[in-house]
Image (cartoon, rainbow, N blue to C red):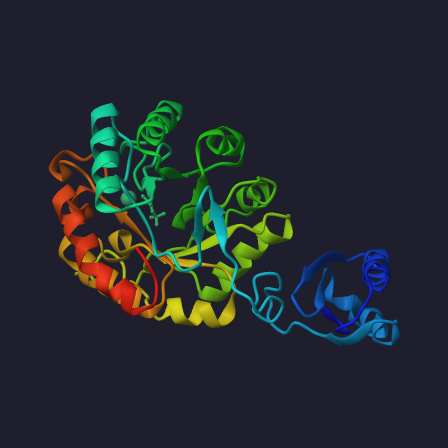
Length: 338
Ligand code: PEP
Ligand code: MN
């Protein structure tokens, strides 16, 4: 339910409504706007009638049910778009944010060379997996904490923020010590223990859409993080499984404008996993800009032939630089800056 306060409602009236909602066993999520305050009451749907009675409380204008199954993520509750802050950056605002780097952190020269090159080309966030979710248990699993330390070194030298994946609840604390943004991979989108744990962390979360998940499921996964108290969620469209075999996944770009209608959370696009084909990354990056994405996540490697993972879809350093040059006018056409 959303409790809409009157324009001139006093702080005492707002506090009273919040107290009443809590007494009824709901979580209170007040949103203070320029004109008025709205209060989200989140909890068991069965107590709706009691909340409706708040309509007669002084200072309350209206009590409106949220119809979507996801509440805190919904635009019904928050009309204004959320911006997620990472240091000086604001994801979901005017700046179009490019995150780039290798699939896996492999060694110092690899990550440092990549970090310097993507920074020079205009990326603002360095990606790189230290914990890797691999389809086969025999594939490279990541350098773990050693990888996180290498990311930190790259950050110290270049000033790039770090996005890196966390796979298990027991690693959240460790990864959060090094990462500016914690990535939840496609395979973990419905790892609910992990999501709940990430709801307790004071760091932004990049939540990737699952290989076979609907947008409603994606938003309900975001809701797990939001409802635990972490409002800093960035959604990522990274392609879904379809019958098509020429691409690794089918990049669902209609998800971008649709998510912008359904949610106030920022949305970025990963054309690397979304297509799995190097030659398709630039055209799909342009299309993502036009679809209204807030940023891109792109795999880049100094020597893709020798990459430990996802070499086939990784751009060479100069290809990434070219991509940045090509997308700039498209970004500007959308009224944003790179
Ligand atoms: C990745 O970003 O390297 C990754 C494993 O992505 P996804 O979870 O989307 O497959
Ligand atoms: Mn990858």
